[in-house]
Image (cartoon, rainbow, N blue to C red; front, top):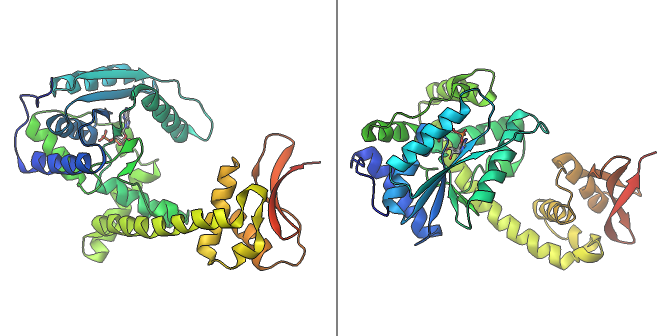
Length: 328
Ligand SMILES: Nc1ncnc2c1ncn2[C@@H]1O[C@H](COP(=O)(O)OP(=O)(O)OP(=O)(O)O)[C@@H](O)[C@H]1O
């Protein structure tokens, strides 16, 4: 069915959502079919309704993580709601969640892999809202996890789309009520053992109170500004990587002439290109000292390379070289 479902009431909340999705589609996916990652919660359910109204053809993709006894029933209900809302198809994707990196990271990995396998070339929309963005920024700031994490989520990180990053969570809940849909309330969303839940229910309200309101939009705005700044620095790093001659190791002289923010991004991009994805700020700063504070120091460890070996960056004849060092 290409037309909106019969229950799409035109209320202010529904209109706000439709407008957000319409803008996103016009910018990133005009005329394309889209998938919606549907958990059954308020955000992605409201998103599904708006997407059906605005996009030609919408497929709901519901991941069943199999972690709770009622997960299959929750997923089936979400898929049924998606069909009622007018999705051309609604698929439940059962996944097996591993353990590596902790339960949340493992579930996330399994979810994205399943969505990627099911999306059939289409972009997939997520229900992350302005409030989710604000929580991400606050978490990134508090953990000192660097500019990339404070930049929060981007509206389009192909193939993943987030049309609701400027929409408040209250609006998605209102839209569900307006549409007569009862979203699933995930008990994890109110469990205080999750850091995010405490940020949402304790830290942000306290900050709102102390700062006189407007904190979540301010955090989200900061993310957008940093994304714009970050894009410029990333582009400069791509250029520097080419100039420094990544293939045969990076030229120290070329790196040294660049500002530190660009230099560190360049080294990070170079390492990532070589498959080193776990380098931290501490690693990158130690590599940087091989460039700016050279006094013959030894190679710098930059991440694991399987059992019995580690990857290091060494300064050799005026170039940075990535080497495998055997651990004795
Ligand atoms: N099981 C799932 N299947 C498909 N998509 C999911 C699933 N869980 C989360 N998502 C997607 O990721 C987004 C963010 O998920 P998160 O767990 O942070 O929020 P949520 O409370 O589930 O949000 P929502 O209110 O949309 O359910 C959701 O809006 C949805 O698009």
